[in-house]
Figure (cartoon, rainbow, N blue to C red):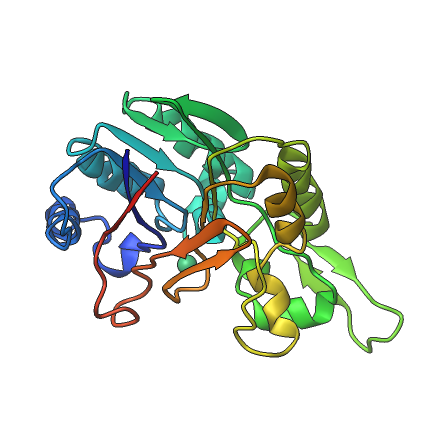
Length: 268
Ligand SMILES: [Fe+2]
């Protein structure tokens, strides 16, 4: 089986509320493909900030492929503009709506903690979530603190060693736990798909690295021994091995981040 893959298309940076532009983006991406088969396509999250655009974009790609697997990324939880009211200040209402809308695409599976077999190959996927060691560092470092909500009121928290209270709109510890529970008992999968990477690649070399990997990734790889783990989030292209598992990330990212971008293919 040939798996085509890319991640982090962030489509509203290319084509927002504009079907002609989304058509053009999908065509442009598909034209980068260098292999003839349109078997399976995997996208590891950060589709974009608006559900209708996301669904339209994915429906265009799904017309070309036999099967599409998608999971969500942190940006697929963002509530911008009227989305705050629309989803009642809860990002997980937005996620639920995205999932429901994607059910209308018969050959697309949105993975949110499920193990799915397709033609003898097992796929497991979810967004997964990173660990926050210091709330104040996280609040200064990540936009996630501003645009992800799980209720209308702010959480206001003053750490014993801080002079000022930290405000945030969702509880990252709860999400971390919830995502970990989904993968904790996984004991078999050929292909794992997650938005957050399984390994610390040392992107910034400081505490900010915490937001770019799940701390249990190596443990899962040792136990599950997947053939490959396809991920996103860092916008840096990678293809390397940990133990016998191939770790792959092929981001489009924001405009100009990956000028040599092409849809990559792997055999499984
Ligand atoms: Fe991203």
